Length: 420
Image 1 (cartoon, rainbow, N blue to C red):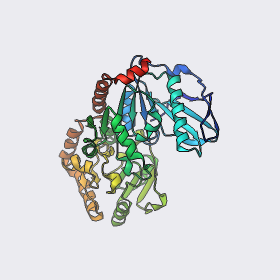
Image 2: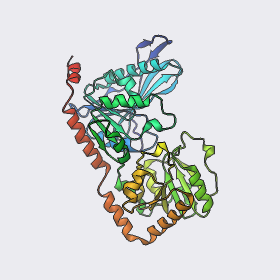
Image 3: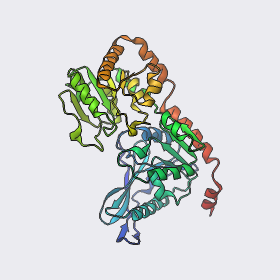
Image 4: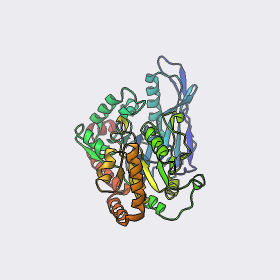
């Protein structure tokens, strides 16, 4: 997604001295307050606390919040950058879709206590300057409770995308923070059916909202599209993957498939995160093309013969529900995946994807997938019938209805606090 030109950086003008730390300056200057005008007077804002950066990869938060912003102002607050020497400040920029992205910038080397205290001050100044009075909190990370627990939202939503506590580098206190968030949340959404089955006993209002699909966007890949320059010279058949390349990928499986079938070209698109790039297999038929924008994905998909979900089977993939599964299918591409539970159910069970885990099984499944694309005309009809049942528009409409119901039963303490 492209960004709009309306970008503001605010500077705090007050000073702050946190006990036990050096004197810190906070800056905030409003260069053009007209851009912050509330287009939905009387409608509560939505403030999202996210561990994922808006401009990283286009996934669930972007799909949902770009729909939410049609109904209310949306502010997404990212985790801080520790890139300042002696000042704490915020950058605030509005994306083309209308979402305001807020990034705290903090000095390096602060204690956890000071980091939290500064984030609270910055958040308070943000609310004051932007006129955020009635609002809903939408959490993607329970860790944000540390600097938001002094505020009084009308409702709290926890959109639980993954079991974050099992990810590499997860903070040790994350489990307790999530338990606290379950105590405070009015609604809990889960990013997949498997995650729902684990979380549904932890809160009275848990709802499963698995990965959905923007069919119109990805169905473009079924048409004749010029191959992107960096893919055009790669021979066929092409086996493609896009997404974050991290500890969830089965690197040994990829290497084994590439060695077993040197005539098959593996195209991998996406940023490399939390793993050493040198640990990735370097073979003539494996092509790393880097990250691509959401708008570019159909152009790459159009040139693939089979789409892959080569995830490792470990704790970090136990509850994932890959958004790319329906996206691959909407593009008309046969899919081969490892036995991820939320891919097996429903996609394998409905005969829409091939499942394989070992190298020999995966190689054989790719051959079946290639034949499916060429000979099974009914397969694409089944794909379209399944995809017609869901969309990000429908998912957001259901979520929005639940949120409105939660807001209509505002906690008395929240009203009293605001009136006071």
